[in-house]
Length: 329
Image (tube, rainbow, N blue to C red):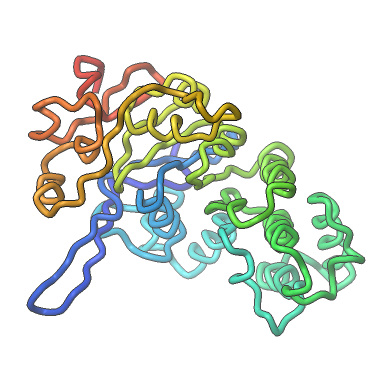
């Protein structure tokens, strides 16, 4: 079956500097990802800042192009889509961003972000039908139309603005939503509500989600499977229950050990991870060595000589670490 959205060995390098000195930053390297049309799933993308999560989202949305590899929609490269195919892609693949305020025009009432896609994609036969659709979508995510419509963005809370973007997705009925840190800028009190709204998109509207976050707690709560990124590379992937409860890559263990515990003295895991080595010599070695070698308590000689491949430690679990050499590649 052809995946609805697919990344094939994508690599993204950002270049800066003048003619005499050019700097290169590897934002994403040799990453593969498939999202099927059915059944709907929620795939978590986890990793610290700078791991390549947002770059991946921008590539999948077609905002930027990969340096190498291909991003495909329905089996066709994004760059080769016809005008009509691109219009369909824009409807099928939607986004919910970290800061919803940036999506809104401060001079327009919030009604504008709801009516515009309905008109653009000809989803309502009349203004009366459009109004009814908008009211129903707002009620699904727990907002009262009478208290929400007619207001300007600054008159709503961050949580309300984010939930309106979820309502917008309900109206458009995409097949995939890329949610990039959707709850990182809202109060803890509203976080659970937004997560429940996202689950509703999957369960009731059959929409798949790519949930991008540095927060493993919410990623675990909402995801079916998870990909863990470190410095642009995939280090571990699999069923979320397996990866979180039985992490295999030392970096995943580090992430989990960083989750706050209700007993401060009690740690999730007892491993002595090293701080990242920022020296120029170490950065040079990163091109041919394991990227986590300088922080890993299990580092071996081979880790400084080769980039580890992905090992399949079980049918639903993959890890990039020489500790599992001998498992299927």
